[in-house]
Length: 139
Image (tube, rainbow, N blue to C red):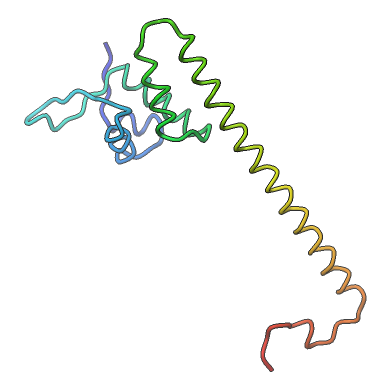
């Protein structure tokens, strides 16, 4: 069975060893210890898969607690229905959050467009005094 060092995993997934240790602290990874005093972390294929799932969850924007719930189900018996149902719930919540963000962004972009249009109108009208053009500056 293949094993990996923290350095190998950090290179493979382009993350820092510190990030991997953080995921370990959060209970997402549980490497075996080897060497004098158990100083060396040894990651099995299971831990590599858990790290891969964790990073995938992060890319989706899931919280660490959501990721942990889903990744922990990876170790449960082969009945995947509860895992899929939980994943659907998490995705629905995340979709709702992203749709709200998109709505907020669209409102903000519309406001920016209105301000840009007003600025262009004022500039093209030629009605600005030098003082108005540098509003906020002291003479």
